[in-house]
Image 1 (cartoon, helix red, strand yellow):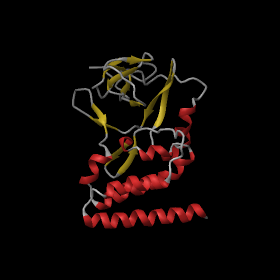
Image 2 (cartoon, protein in one colour):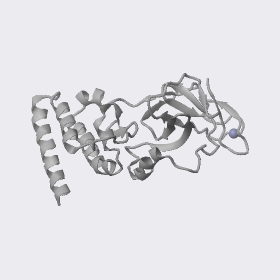
Image 3 (cartoon, helix red, strand yellow):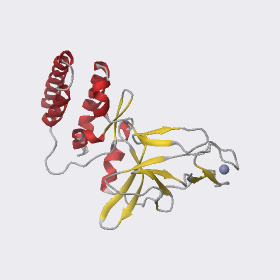
Length: 235
Ligand SMILES: [Zn+2]
């Protein structure tokens, strides 16, 4: 089992990851699980920057939660959209730390990420990604589907203004936590700006997999939303 330090500055005792409380000072332990952005290949038990322990693909545990993050004074460009989108942190993770890499952009470690932590008595928690929206879509009620779409629709404008609107066109980034829509990470728009029409096409493609009854009301919903959106944009 992995070890992590107590965050109490006067203690800092090393504890098993599965412990609820520090074995020395009895403070509740902070287990901060982070998502490492991008396509990195990490081995379980690999440690980055002397503190971030790889639990499984791209999921890390901060083993020294009492220390401040390492990040340098200069904020990399990739971090800025996360900072600006902090009012939307229910749906968008936040940057906890970043690590400089040679010949590559900094590695961003995200907190409040789309991770599901299952607590197990006396063992290390089981941490994995939240379910993919595309897997849950067909099982969800029409009300829940509309609810997810409504959240995506509300995210479009703020993400678009930060040049990360194309994140809403990548279903592999869509996670759900019950009725809540969550993005795994943000992707910078490159080249062409993403358009509302592309978002519409993506939604329409989901509508096609629904029942006929739902498809009709779904298409009506998409059309009316886009109509309203275009009117707003044209004002
Ligand atoms: Zn302690």
